[in-house]
Image (spheres, rainbow, N blue to C red):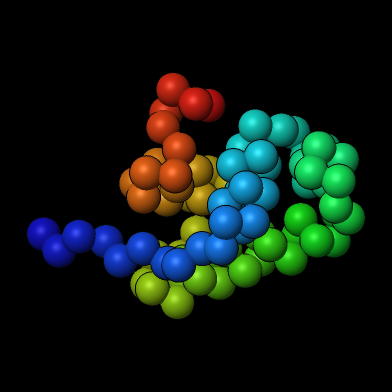
Length: 79
């Protein structure tokens, strides 16, 4: 089996993504990281686009969690 191609995520995209996994809402992430909720949405849209561009679409939060685990961005114990 060929290893999955990982998208090149910016450090801030990873930070927003992981913070979102630990919160209930994008608004909570915005408060935690001191950014606008629209900025959170933009980062998550870019992450999804980058995954889609490498043939690994992740349209839901659960799918993004799976991708992040597969790519070593988080571990199941972190959730």
